[in-house]
Length: 426
Ligand code: LLP
Image (cartoon, helix red, strand yellow):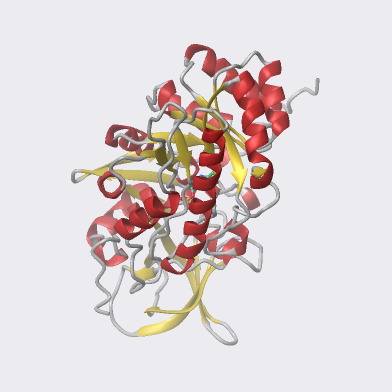
């Protein structure tokens, strides 16, 4: 292959002087998010799935500017927590575009979401266990409910992101029709939902198809029992290429396979049931770059180590899933050396890549880490008491601050009152 991939924004497509200037202005590490690319990715999804309801999985990137871009593109918001519902409403999503997926929901989340529902009665709650239905009733909720099903088939780039057969998610598909019947008696029953996993590649497509087939079958069974439903949500998970010459997912082929596997589902009144999808990664992954400065360079026993100011607290994916991200030294060209890029955290796992060929680094160089827009900032932590970095957003040739950097002085704010004294215990 030529390595050229028109459907994924390559690290090499970012303008180096622009990125270097950003790291000068805003410091490092620095997340950079291209909102234009986010909008293009939304358009690609809308074109491939013209008749589907598309809900952006907010967890992939929750920044206000990203949420506004997705909202303007016409996608709905799929939220995994009260916090994501709060962010989505603040970013201007109306209640009828908010889908809250309750995963073993804490009481505070249900309290909050039911409060939001009172003013936004078109909001939908997706429920993954029968007792969550009871917990909603106890709070006076009788609105739109979707049932999350455990389809018994999973997919995804790593076993830690395969959800379709994992015990913690959803009602087993064998019991789903009964729970749907119980739900329809007490709520406005609107659909069924399942999610196979994250980072589905062309190789996993048969698992995706099997999930969709099972969901189509279930939907027909529910409709035959006289229960109306608006949609069948087959989740997100569409993968993007991380390795430079990996081919992109053929979205049109995925869409065609999905429709075929789903088949036709009609409501008891003869209306067609909608297909719904929930992509997160696909919308934001290739719109993001993480910039990091090389602070030390040393010859270790077996490898050259570049010590950077980004690490597992800035980008957890390599430590957690052995995930691959493209990395380039954007400060120089020239001789290429295998380099291990390691962060500033006191953990052996704090390594972003091993023996990766990059232009031989010198102290002060800036590395760009690609495809960092999904589950990058979102999985960041302040472990080792490292404040989280800033994020700048780009659109139409302009850059602006999307989220400011956390300050050292903010690290203890939860432990101290405004005068700096330790917080009082209750
Ligand atoms: N819908 C539900 C119910 C989900 O749980 C998820 C992701 C999505 C949609 C969106 O999946 P996506 O289209 O982004 O693959 N931190 C991991 C990914 C975890 C995904 C969790 N759920 C990673 O960095 O690979």
